[in-house]
Length: 347
Image (cartoon, rainbow, N blue to C red; front, side, top):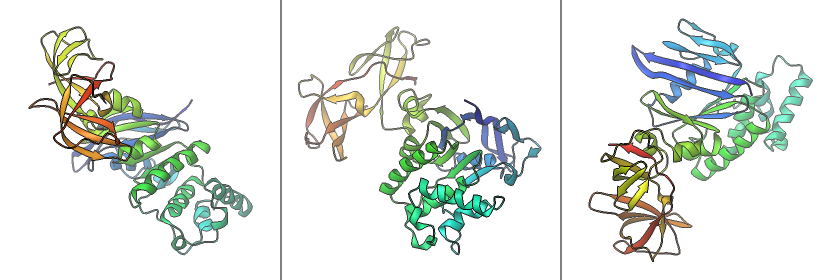
C-alpha cells in the first residue's frame, strides 16, 4: 500500500508556546486514522496543520509523497486536495441537497457533475432527497450530506473535526459505523478528531492518543487497550485499576490476587515494586472462588453490571458481571482472574 499521509516530527506553536510537539504518524491509502485526547491536547491544531491552516515550527507533512508543510513553507489549503467536514456541517441553507454536494464540482461538465452527485446520493441511501433543503433533513441526514459533499471532489484525504458532536449518543454510534462503511467502500483516506474513545474505536484503523501536545501512542484500538505505552494511555483508554505488586523473578510478580505474570519483563528487577493494569474483563465472577471481595459500587449497563470491589484498604478493582447476578452494595462476591500476561508500569 502507498503512504497517503506522513506527519514527521511536527511542532506547532502559538506565541512561542508549542501546542503540538514532535508529532509523527502516517496513514496508508484507504486507512482511517483518529486523533484522540482530552480538550486542549492539540489534536485540532494538528488537523488544521494537515489542512494547511497552521504553519509548522519544525517537521513536515507529506500528502501522497509531496511535502505540503515544512518550516517557512506551507502549501495553501485550496491546493492540497483535502476535504473537510466541520462540527456544524456548514451546509448552504439556500441550496438543495444535490447542489450542496455538487458545489465543489465546478470544474466538471454539468453531466459529469450530475453523475457524481447521483453516485454519492446512492452511496448514502438518499437518492430521493436530492431536491430537499438542509432544514428539511434530520441531523443524521445533514451529517451524511456534509460527508459526501467533502468526498465529491475525490480528495487525497478527508479531515473530520468532531463531526458527531452535535448529535445524541445513539445516533453518534450509528453514524460512526455508517461513515466507516462509506469511507471504506469508496477507499477514502480519512482522519477524525474526537475526545470520545468509542467513536475512535468504531471509526478508526489507527488511533493516536494525545496529551499536552504530544503523541503518546499511535496504534490500533486493540493495542491501545491491551498494550498501552504508559499510564496516561492506560487510564484514558477504557476502564481499569492499578494493582501493586513486587517482582519475584522473571515475569512473576506477587500481588494481593496471588502470583501473576507481566508481559514486560526485560528490565524488571527482583524485589522491585511495580503496578499492573487490571481491566474489568480480567476479573470473572465465581461464587466458588476463595477471593471474596466487598461490593463498593455498581453501575447497571443492561446486560452487565460494572462492580467496584474492595481488594484491600488501598486498592479497588473493577469487575463486569452478568446483570442477572444482582448483588447489593456491601455484599461480598467471589472473583477469579482470567488473564494472560499483564501490562506492568513502574511506580
